[in-house]
Image (tube, rainbow, N blue to C red; front, side, top):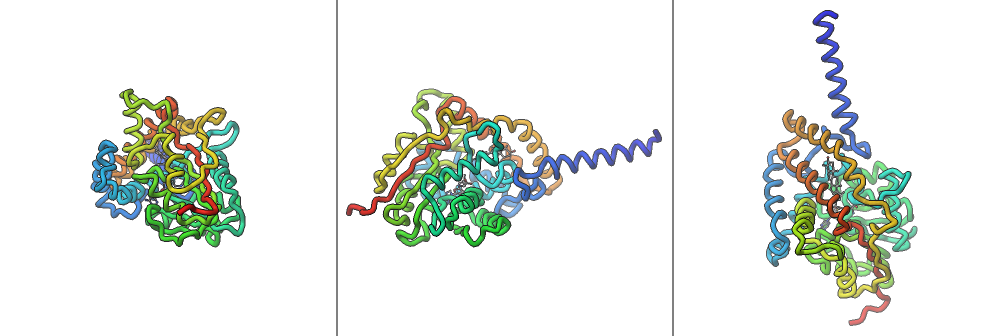
Amino acid sequence: MEVSTAMWTAAVVGAAVIYWFVWVMGAAEVKGKRAVNLKMGSITRDKVQDKYKQYWSFFRRPKEDIAAASDGDKVPAFVDTFYNLVTDIYEWGWGQSFHFSPSLPGRSHREATRLHEERAADLIAAHAGQRVLDVGCGVGGPMRAIAAHSGAHVVGITINEYQVARARAHNRKAGLHDRCEVVCGNFLEMPFADASFDGAYSIEATCHAPRLEDVYREVFRVLKPGALYVSYEWVTTALYREDDARHVETIRGIEAGDALPGLRAQHEVAAVARRVGFEVVEELDLALLPAGSWWTRLKMGRIAYWRNHLLVSALTALRVAPKGVVEVHEMLYETARHLCDGGETGIFTPMHMILCRKPLVTPN
Ligand SMILES: C=C(CC[C@@H](C)[C@H]1CC[C@H]2C3=CC[C@H]4[C@H](C)[C@@H](O)CC[C@]4(C)[C@H]3CC[C@]12C)C(C)C
Ligand SMILES: C[S@@+](CC[C@H](N)C(=O)[O-])C[C@H]1O[C@@H](n2cnc3c(N)ncnc32)[C@H](O)[C@@H]1O
């Protein structure tokens, strides 16, 4: 073969490999978000690295410091920064539902996700004609599944403006915009009238609240008497031991990489719900056997993460992605490792389910 032919062949093969690597392999779980489109929410390109540093220095501290009265109030703003940094990476590498689900034999991750969401809708008996609240709705994966499954009108709230835009675009694309509404706001002070919802759910979102009481009290306020509320909570289990250095490292790693002001213990959740006035109907860790492990996909994704790391590094070097994306991606890789440890040791669950009812008559 002539040298020029060999060079042309190498160039064409090289271009094909890069195309495959970036545009095909780098495509999102749910088509729509690709590596070349990684933005960092509403943060301007030049501020990404600084914002990441600010985020990290806030959340890597011990939870006692974060929860201190003055810093507790700053948590929602840092959670907002976190979602500016991670929303596109989540959509690209995970899909439109930002939560875990028990793995189901013979079913895809997407199907298992949908069934976990539909389970929440069934628990609160959501149905057509109702107005249901999604507390911490992300980009609306659960909201669309629940609206489609139950026929209810779903209103989602998220602190992050960028997620609002993403969720609205997805709702329109799915043809569900007449039944799925998205509001930007703080779930600790919701812009909704008292007793204005027939039901509510929160999927892996209330863990961002510095005090669980504050979000549960708000949900209680906006629900009609007799309405049901279900929450999937991130908590430490009874197996967690504060005197075990490995346990502490795992939980700290989960908190720092997931914008959490301090994980609560499983046994605390029902007490909080009762304190704000709810009746507790049912409580169950949905991760318990015979449920398939929720961390399987995170563990299996190691090769994909390595590919993603190369991809974000290359895109940053080419200035397609802003500086700072590599650090954010590394933080997510680290937290994935801690989440897998938490799952395998059984000291942590992201799906402690609590089902509550607002009593028909609230005592004064
Ligand atoms: C409920 C929350 C988020 C839960 C999960 C949706 C996310 C937790 C950790 C995330 C990820 C970790 C590793 C990333 C990987 C390195 C990257 O290449 C592709 C995306 C990841 C898989 C990413 C996806 C979302 C998570 C699984 C919290 C925040 C309360
Ligand atoms: C891990 S995501 C889960 C999203 C969604 N429930 C899902 O499963 O796809 C957590 C969500 O809670 C929202 N959130 C966190 N703190 C909030 C607050 N104080 N007010 C409103 N939303 C908040 C985040 O913006 C994000 O949308």
